[in-house]
Image (cartoon, rainbow over all chains, first blue to last red):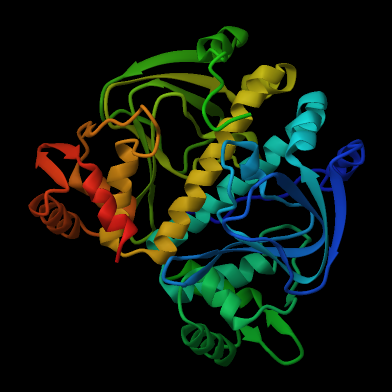
Length: 222
Length: 217
């Protein structure tokens, strides 16, 4: 893992909402409970989504039925943006994690606002750049690191370590299945490492999942 | 906005819109544009040739995260708050590139909707590709990953753009791209050749039958 100092601060995370409010037709606000599907792998891809509140995971299922979580996105993130290219079909399934509120923006409406509002298009560009950096880092992590390191990294990122003043030491509920699908291993390996991290005092699972900065040791040292 | 560059968009026009702060470079194979850890102060646009982005782990393992083809941008990470290069960019064949100072790129993106549309469509297609690479790592065996990378390098799936004969690419690079060892790559290449999926004498010729490795178990 190269230097982990990717800063993911967006200067004004909620500006997007102001622009999205300019869209007249082709926009719907959706409220979802935990674990509801927003779109499924293989569906026609004709809208972009923006998370107003909550979390959404993107899950890919292999032909053999193995699941992988390719992203856990948070408030202020877009998803389904691949429909803006020639990709006509969803390559992943989007599922809400906890109560979530999203805006669904029809492809044509999104293209229009990107075209008409240069400031929005700049904001969206910077989102794409940040997202690409993160996926590239995930890929590097897969190429290089053990599943133990990958688990520690994902926990630290979920707790926003490295984002100044945004660290959330207590993680919202996330299942061991989801963690195992995020890092490409089995649930039992995740359980094994979580127990190990807890014994070493890096995490604490009483009353929510507490992440201590000492967990950085797993990522930083060999 | 499409993943294919807009045919009416002439990348050369992009370059004419940039006044100061750009440099045209023609480099030989193996030229390093910048190294992991260098200060990130410019974006690059690849006009001709191919460029590899590689990352070195602390343990000294090398991973190739991209082999870029003409009309790609690289090091666009510097447009965010990323101030240091996350990877090393090396020409894997003679290449022509344009180096655009960060400030100048930000200015032209800000002022020229045509450039920013083109750049956005590049980012979206790059985003799709990296995501697919990640899925491939999460799911597939090294044999399938090798078959997939060969098919992608030969542009299978891009109508009318298939190039069954690959430009020279070393077994080391292939190994670094899929996260395995050179000897595994050599083993699978021999297997693919025996099965008639590829021809390999220094250059590769890829047959569409190689798709069998990717599509079936």
